[in-house]
Amino acid sequence: DGGITQSPKYLFRKEGQNVTLSCEQNLNHDAMYWYRQDPGQGLRLIYYSQIVNDFQKGDIAEGYSVSREKKESFPLTVTSAQKNPTAFYLCASRTGEAGYTFGSGTRLTVV
Amino acid sequence: AQSVSQHNHHVILSEAASLELGCNYSYGGTVNLFWYVQYPGQHLQLLLKYFSGDPLVKGIKGFEAEFIKSKFSFNLRKPSVQWSDTAEYFCAVKRYGGSQGNLIFGKGTKLSVKP
Image 1 (cartoon, each protein chain N blue to C red):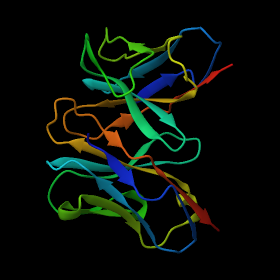
Image 2: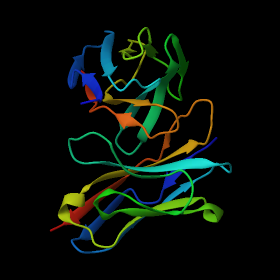
Image 3: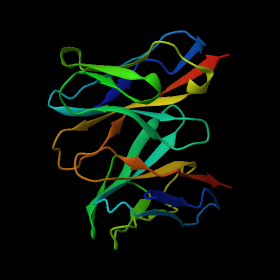
């Protein structure tokens, strides 16, 4: 079945460490997105990519980085510069004007 | 800046009660509108969407929403809720034809249905 796979489901990070969250899709979608979800805040856009080898900052990009070397993959790195990284991270993809497909998310906790 | 407002943070209803969740957006141009649901421990699922045509949109699980352009609103309704509707509901807006195609989400409304 086509869909989006995010891994790992749970991730723990020590202070000062960089961690990378994986997002893979087999939907052949051009656009991919990373959102951060915090209680009472809804979803906020971190980065997005409309096409391979191109990506743009969203509303809260500071402390994060991404790459888009392959159409099906859009990994997100949470760097040590992100001061409050504990959150639920959602990856999504889209093609054309259609709706978005979301992954099941990664819950990142700083320990 | 474009924004999406959901009126209620937490709604508590008894089974069989009617539901209406408010959603307003601030962008004046053509928009695509969505409602997503997130059941406890699960990922976001699309309930319904509006792109054009009939402003009354029917979605899955008996949900519907009405787009009222003059009020910049896209309220979600269900005539009779069930315990299984307990979830968090997110309204989202996308500018039609925008270069980014980004969804802007409201902060969500938690719905708790008492059996």
